[in-house]
Image: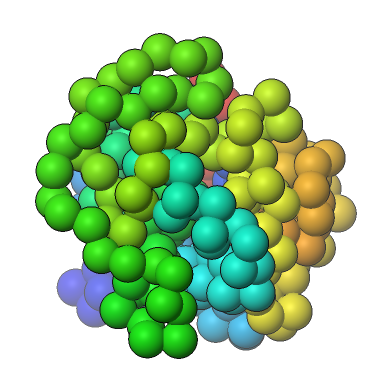
Length: 237
């Protein structure tokens, strides 16, 4: 029935993709068709879209930064922009990143929240900045890069937000708590780097990875035949 093509079934919780992002896409495209699968998230008893889950991700950064005025002041005073794994991350304004080898969300969340605070009269120390390029010195290695200045960031440094070796570790998504305890999702069989840093299973990163589910169009699932028992086989290259 064509109606089954409009039904979606969750087939597994794949966890962290990281650099396997493109491999996942190729594998699942070949198995289900590009329009036959999607990444969704389990939240508060429902399976919801990635976009809805990203709103919770960003809200966690909003709550975290709003409760840390000294951190906000440091960012806007000394930094001109932030990035995750590549300096080129500063050019991405959207969470949707089909062009990147691995998704980077934490830097985008930080930029978006600070840009909001610029317009908040209760934060007089956070002021608007011109839309310009600036020479920014990477606090990670001292190299200078000509890059766009993020809104509200009036400093001269570039801050990497990544692991404990990065200067911006205090903004790492494993450090930032998920803002709503209802989003904490224990998974007895899942393992990952995010369970060994910062807030561990209480972090926004743990929420993001552990709530992730692959949904498949039910007609494509039925077409798998005997492979239905292992619909996510091969995701780990």
